[in-house]
Amino acid sequence: MIDNTAVIHPTAIVEEGAIIGANVHIGPFCWIGSQVEIGSGSVLKSHIVVNGITKIGADNQIYQFASIGEVNQDLKYAGEPTRVEIGDRNRIRESVTIHRGTAQGGGLTKIGNDNLLMINAHIAHDCKIGNRCILANNATLAGHVEADDFVIIGGMTAVHQFCIIGAHVMVGGCSGVAQDVPPYVIAQGNHATPFGINIEGLKRRGFEKEALHAIRNAYKLLYRSGKTLDEAKPEIEALAKEHPAVQLFVDFFNRSTRGIIR
Image 1 (cartoon, rainbow, N blue to C red):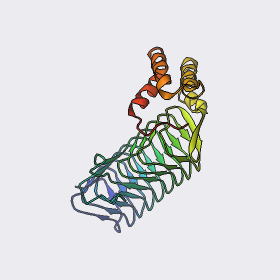
Image 2: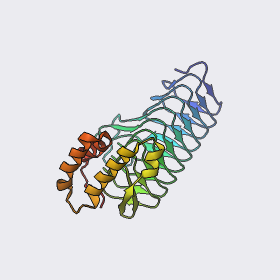
Image 3: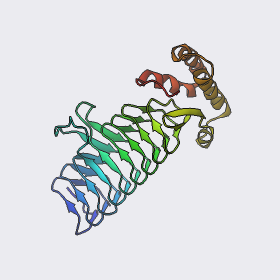
Image 4: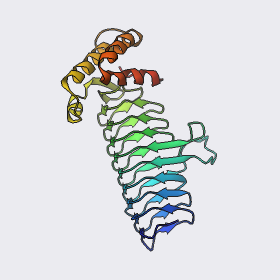
């Protein structure tokens, strides 16, 4: 079903069954598969392939040569009806690749709202990306990676499969992330190590001094106290009861399976 306000270039191919919303613009030489849904106001510039069971929300800007919803690179994939879901107001730049999920990984690759995926970024099968994240040029997420809200990943950085990147994290360029990165942390290097709290980013997002002080204290317990993670956890949990911003650490620990960067 194609809304009568959609604008589709004569050279684009939209297979029967695709759902194209109001005021969608599909540019030259795009190919849209039969199980694709594109929300209102989204713009596909040109030479874009959207395949598989893929749902794209409203007001997204997708640039040339992007490939979304294609068969993933997991050798176990056997054609199961897995999906990609993308939220609203994302900017997906040139040559970005976003692969469908796997049956073993929950069947879904999911991207939230208001993200910027720069040129040649790769989001592999079963990844979960939150809101207002930035993946710079050539950032590469392996399968099953989770990036929470406000994550920034620098150019040429690779993230190992199953890693979790906590909210408000900044990972510097040319890094290799092999373990989970706690929220609020600046990480850099191969393998990535912690370099303090992302204070400037938190200030820009409106964090008050008291919250920043509590986050610093949690970081010190985690990385500068000489305590093991198991020893630091109860003290961070106690701190979270007084300062809600610290609760992100507690929630992160409950999800972490690969150990944290050191």
